[in-house]
Image 1 (cartoon, rainbow, N blue to C red):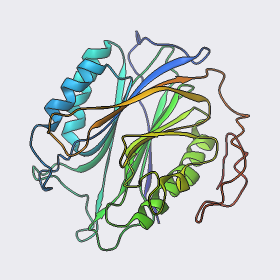
Image 2: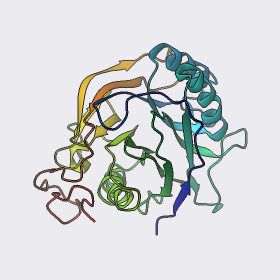
Image 3: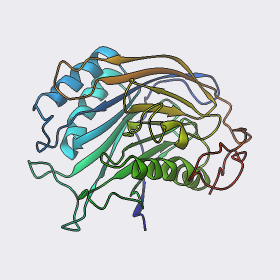
Length: 293
């Protein structure tokens, strides 16, 4: 059974800037896997500093973070706030640790997992944080993979996850769970907002299984040429995407995409017929707000 938590957000300070939900919004999305647990071979101790430099240079509106310690998210939020000079919010979800029944921890003792940073355009209409552990896990891996979504009312439902690294079959099941079950449940509880998922999915275009097997019909997807992807609902247009060098501080490049999101909501969004992929939830994918169960 997945563990799911919902946190109602406190009021964000007034004075935030950005395009409201009534007009098209340009959203720059940056996905980074920082390999900062201190335990993996890819750890350098430099990735958070480099991530801060990339945030300053690229000025993203939304940042999705994988393989980070909880205090890394706090540190990068401070940088992100200076870049935007407006209201920003962050969220973190710890991976589980199967042997101890606790959370997975970085070498410094901090909880380890995934994080999100996003700017808040005016007018602020509230946000909620949703987090949990995927119900399907690789039993040979002590790390229990987590998912995280930050729903900004009327603006965006931002999500991230870092999927199973040693079993692509498990990674696919986790991806289908997030996009086919979690995201529709958030829509039902929090209202519709365009969904943007950034993450290291440990699935590839053309792989076995193919990453497209977990992407709902009508959604858009771009990647870094490997396992990092940005997936959006059909009310977003991908204007451009490219990788961003991390100067050897981690084993993945950054992935930056510029999106244009329609501003008229999406309650009648038509996603098209269900793809014929094993494991995809039953239903034809045509329900806009509710989606498939």
